Image (cartoon, rainbow, N blue to C red; front, side, top):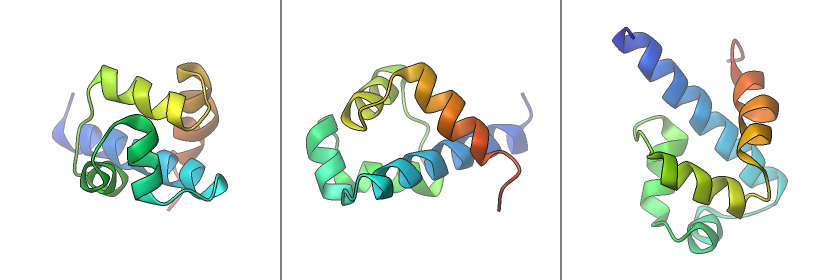
Length: 83
């Protein structure tokens, strides 16, 4: 995978997490608490700076009340091509 493609998926994943978090009216602190992750880590994911592990992706999906499949099909896929 090329470096720009890797950055793109991290960016799209971060946008997806932010979108769902805002739909639920959660702060980064609240999401971090529910997922067992530090709020600054959540912030890094949302900016596309962090590359979360599969374990942390699952924690985020559960905290956002989504299945892994739903997170990727409803949110990450929709973020592709959007500014």
